[in-house]
Amino acid sequence: MNDCIFCKIIAGEIPSRKKYEDDEIVIFEDIEPKANVHLLCVPKDHFAYLTELNDRRAEMLGRTFSKIASLAPSFGLEKGYRLIVNQGDDAGQTVKHLHIHIMGGQELPF
Ligand code: 5GP
Ligand code: ZN
Image (tube, rainbow, N blue to C red; front, side, top):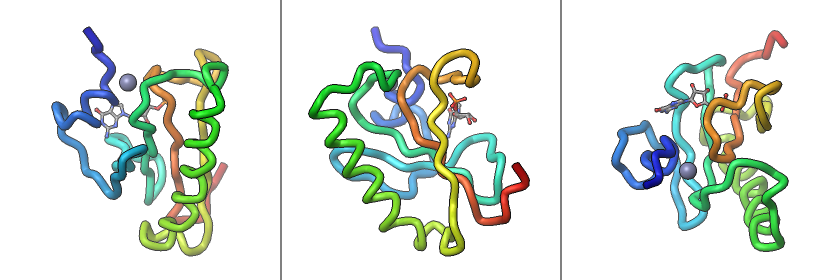
């Protein structure tokens, strides 16, 4: 059984404040925002680490970065934003389903 919290959000089994969805990704608000705008971009394909990339996933991530760039102004990120991909314990990765933090809406103090 898959008890991944992001897979459950993707499946609609756990509620989230979705901002965007297509056949490859979903973008929703982080439940504990650490910036004025703090979104999570999550591929629908469940994998945890960049070491699990293959050609198909790498191409999907390429399209994902383009999509984030084109959507950013609609998220209130006209003045810039930061993308973070935590990998593993030292980075504090708590959810083992690859995700891109999208942060901004303010001058980031770190
Ligand atoms: P990580 O530390 O793994 O890079 O980031 C996981 C992020 O997921 C955290 O910022 C945390 O606040 C967020 N998060 C954890 N559980 C949920 C949830 O159920 N819903 C939403 N929207 N965000 C969550
Ligand atoms: Zn998952």
